[in-house]
Length: 173
Image (cartoon, rainbow, N blue to C red):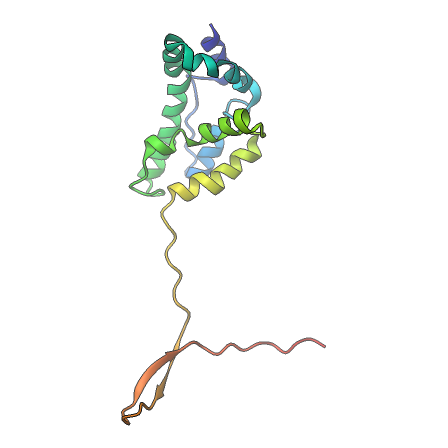
């Protein structure tokens, strides 16, 4: 009965899988709003059932099947689509990254007592999930250099690379 109430409150198992064309916008579409894990509709109920998850194996089994599994499937599908588009690293472990948002939000709410609204979701997406999922940015190109011949002690010319000279504008009066 409790699981069914939570399923109705949070919209599981009928969770829309957005096809937004980018990982960031898809994550925000799934996790923001009243039906996302940051929404208030079922979050308070979840706090009440955490103890039951560890003490009642049958309740935990039903809860994971009806409430967690559909949400996890949508999260995995969002990352899988991003992988198909070549947007994320090929070696990204979907088993680890897919439940990360919910884990971070639940930790903030129940352990730290911090807010978990849409602004927090955006921060987690931008500062945790995307940096973990996206390929590393290419290394910046070295600064432009110029060569200047110098004469070594034995008399032959050698070329050494020196950084360019920076010109600065005169200071205003």
